[in-house]
Image (cartoon, rainbow, N blue to C red; front, side, top):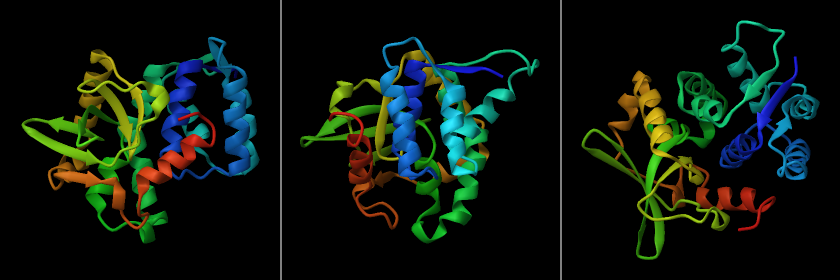
Length: 230
């Protein structure tokens, strides 16, 4: 089955993965990013080739999970599959991703101190970017509550505007959001019962000292800057 992905969708997928310590080797990660960079002026990228590179890991990777997520949505396994930006948003804000996060609780428990902030931070969140005392922060709002996300990484090449809507994953801002996508992500998150429960226990997440990782903003910045100018 031939699979293609919108070039912008591929970039947002990469941005999201670089905000996390996903199970991909540096060699495979670099080869996939290089593939994106070589084709970023084209309208779409051959995702079948991405899967071939990821297959060098000989185990499940986020790229294989994206294919799995997409296959659930088609009724003809012989048709060409095309991954859009909307698909990337839904992949990271729905129960599909939540179940993956649940697995990380067991695999990475030695790194985790606080469970609610781990689960909430691990989902794609629709936020509004603020700037206080020269530093960026993000506000995730639900009902009449606000969770403040402090010490976040804001890529300089994203041209961030204050009081505008963005998507954030862990400490990293990954993309601007239009009103439709902001609402869509918010509604999908509302469908996850445990997400709603865990967020009630949070007033803020400070990524300058996150779990046992320490300065997670710096982790995100270092991973991003390996491939993109900041």
